Amino acid sequence: MDLSTYRFSQTHEWVADEGGTARVGISDYAQSQLGDVIYVELPKVGTEVTAGGKFGVVESVKAASDLYSPVGGKVVETNPALSDHPELLNSDPYGEGWMLRLEPAGAAPDTLVDEAGYATFTEGL
Amino acid sequence: MTVPGVEALRTSLYDRHLALGGQMVEFSGWMMPLQYTSMRDEHTAVRERVGLFDVSHMGEFRLSGPGAEQALDRVVSNRISDLAIGQARYNVVCDGGGGIIDDCLAYRDASDQFTIVVNAGPRLRDLEHFRQVVGGGCEIEDLTLETALIAVQGPRSLDLLRPMADFAIDDVGYYHFHPGRLNGLEVGFSRTGYTGEDGFELFLPWGEAAAVWDRLLEAGRPLGILPCGLGARDTLRLEASMRLSGQDIDESTNPLEAGLGWAVKLDKGDFVGRDALVTVKQEGPRRAFIGLELEGRAIGRHGYAINDRGRQVGEVTSGTFSFTLGRAVAMGYVETASRDSENLTVEVRDSMVPARPRPLPFYKRQRS
Image (cartoon, rainbow over all chains, first blue to last red; front, side):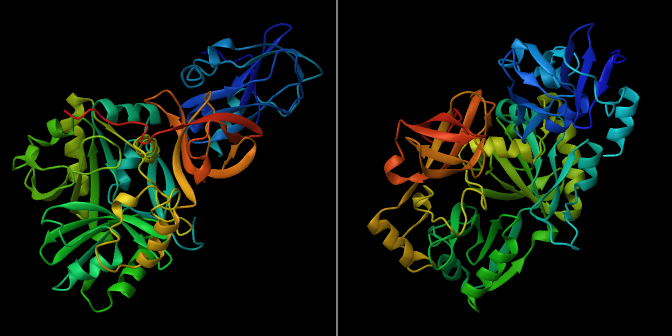
């Protein structure tokens, strides 16, 4: 999969610029660490999220983990498939398992890294 | 919890777990696989086919000598005197106040010899307690570090083991034990488990476990066998409402309120904790151990509050997402008056999730 437009945070979320809006999800590394995802709690459309701010919870049998937005902005859409099929986070974290679409506000934090940078980061964990 | 400077123990299957991609975690002082592929897949393999578990971290004690039966009967809550040779029975080990030190299985190997299987976490505490109560009544040996235990669980267990065993394995009854051979190796076959499915727990010498493990995985391939980790073991036992020592039951709980009264024989003669349990029985338990079905998919986990009309009446001790039922389930203690309440909620991250009492177990297999 081509992840050249994806940027990753150290809390294992990704953001992909889609020309005007930004799509947000969690990394493949994150889903593999969580194991079988059974529940995702996402914000309502219209909610303002901040860069690095908590926007939801992802829960696997193993643990419940907070989700942090890589960028700030207004939620314009959440993935409707996740309420019935949270396992999409495991099977396709960069595609069908996306979580939010945001109307970005402000610049992306410079702590975000590209795919290669993220790979280096997770290798060190 | 790790004691600083003390390294976690490894079972004799440790290298196998690594080779199979097992995610290793420390559990009760042992490095154990949490999962190999997916908890859901491993769980489903056991419910529908067959799964293989390394449970060598469990403790094994041997009690032997002419006084063994009487001595054991003083330590544990269930009746030992009428246990037949080759039979196993669930037992609770209580302290003097009726609190639960651990639960265990007691096997009678011979008229004056018993094997006790205890949990990994409280093993050393158990051993100390057994020695103290038994005194000079019989010999006690801790065989944990020389005994490997492999659990074969699931509806296809018999199909897997039958061709490899040197005796009529179908004839071994539930909660019975048979010493036999598996591909020439001496193995103890126990028709027991911690999953709610048919299956066997195989007792074998530490050094031979890896060879047996390999053969079982190989022979089980056509049956769809999967190696299974502690994660699936937990979701399976929870669906079958089997208590987890140290989590659902501990010294702050007694077997009567834990719903384990069937394993307590107050009329069998004296045993540690009996007097206290007689009092509990006379007064009626203050708490009840109940099953809950939660609305939605969020999990009510260990320690989460259970409320009745907004007032806290108890706590979840175990909770998970039941892969078999497709919903979140939990078990825990509530004040007796709230056991059937229709107004229970579990507090999950600041929200009150409606929870309906549900008879245990959550899952019961269809017996053929």
